[in-house]
Image 1: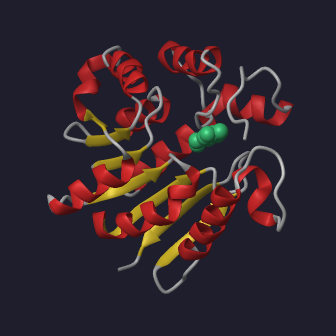
Image 2: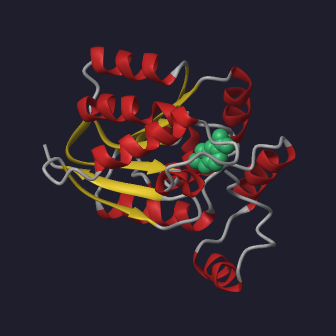
Length: 225
Ligand code: DHB
Ligand code: MG
């Protein structure tokens, strides 16, 4: 399930788009390189970051719950698109990742890091706590344990406002969702989980939704209820 690389071996078309419309500054570049160096090249790509910024602005999103921080690459794109009073709660289970992410957020310009709160906890525990606290958000971004996606979606239904956005990364799961056999490093639990998640999100009685055919699949849904 390879995701971001050093951006040197992508197609000429993708490279053209990235250089023209989705340019990374040093902070974003450094975070992606940090992921590469630590053998976790699994961030979204810059064109996806830019697309999500545009969605945030068009939909007037003011607050976001992010499930899966890693080193904060996507969080940085979000923080830069949110309004002045915007807020991101980003959930990360691994303390070491949280520390690296916090260090990256501290480098954000104009004190934008103040918009971001890292929640160092297991995703289901953190989301259930938010539900107990009656938290409501405009958008949720799911990018964590792949087998957990159906449960994250159930919890998201309680957290995202009517008309809000549910966005999820890796919904093609390296193409494994189109297959009825297992190959590569994908587990059966993750494959079945992602297939179920995609079916749930394709329910037109609940969502206006689409999956974009990015490298890993990026699903976007408006919650209708
Ligand atoms: C993996 C996780 C991701 O979120 C991603 O975008 C790519 C790969 C992984 O765990 O392998
Ligand atoms: Mg991902």
